[in-house]
Length: 177
Image (cartoon, rainbow, N blue to C red; front, side):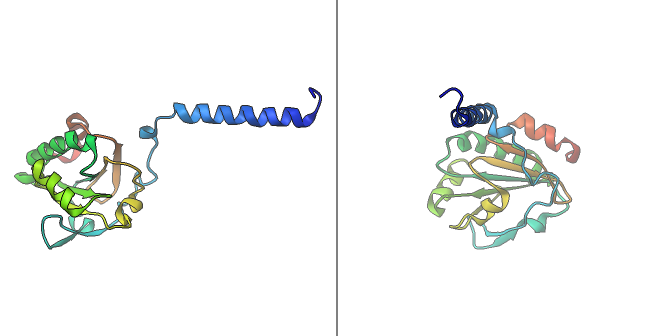
């Protein structure tokens, strides 16, 4: 049995799988870079959540953009909603130094609107279609996920999980006055 090549081949395969799994479990998925980094942000057109108008990402070229994917059922999105709204109030409303867009995914219009109303979201909000085409274009696999887009329309940072005020201030510092 010990001299059989089949015995050793099975053990090599088993050991290889154990090593592969061990490496996978030690890799933080939040640190995996997006293949979209440094590339143009995929354009989309979506209906405003609280209105009948449509907007597209491309109409905001020339100004930095925060693109946040969220859902009403997401616990981390509740804390993040306050951070995003405060950042928008500071730099987007009066100063018009950036645009903030929130796209609700895997959500109903009723729940998304209630969430937005509860957390006082005043920036542009849309709801992804039933197929999740916008989320698919951005490679979203969970919420929240946030993309930072420069004035030329290129993605320069992606955060998986909740953003912080400090992170947003640091990443947008080159574009804000």
